[in-house]
Length: 340
Image (cartoon, rainbow, N blue to C red):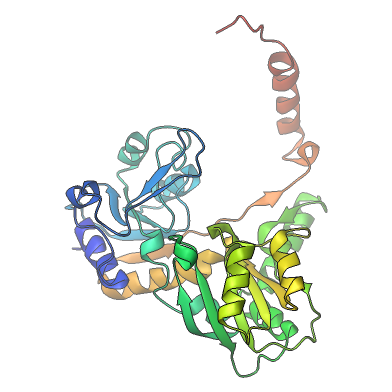
């Protein structure tokens, strides 16, 4: 029977030894993938620890869930479906990953172990560039000296000649036809045409260029990692053959300075998959690797789906009446400032 410790060992194999072996190693401050993430917002930093975050290493494991970000939804689904351990791609933190309560209490309640990998997993496979239609020739996971500032330089794959080819490739690989069909059915069942959904709303698009614009040498960036206009100018200066900037995982919208910089440099600018697709880009390969390494353990993928619905169309009339009553009786200026 596999144990939580076997998941840790499997993650070490998968990452080439980037995971931590103990909390003593974490506290030493010497592990390159134990990283404090902070944007300076008081009290909101988090320490990335690739490996076991919480749980008994000797706990037996029959079922593992791989997710992108641990939330209370993930923990509840794990508890309801017999999951013994959750492997999250993103860092796990008290309150943020567990419905505002302490992580230990929530995971103990359902006897679920929690593990993470994130930066220790990045750069291990060329899948994201491959899905976006190019082969990586060189890259960096700390471009400009900023840890986590990932950048790839690639050459378009055979059959990829235009920006439109990249968009069509993404549409096919990510099975967006299924997401569009699912959204159409949900709108029909709920009788709400205004429902919107992340996978459909955040599909790829072109900022600079046309579907017919030629593409050969691609600079693949991830704006949320801090990739700056100065980084863009430097990368193009170092690689003068670049003709296209491709932004994925995160994107930029009209008016962003990265777009203007690309315009000044005479480049195409294409937005690819957004963060909602990383569960397929990175999560699914991770899940397959764990499935191969952990004999006798069932591995499942937890995929988020987020929708947007006008507030007065949510639920049924009973739920709407409930919400109106709670708001009007208790929330609309009913509490004096002196009350505690």
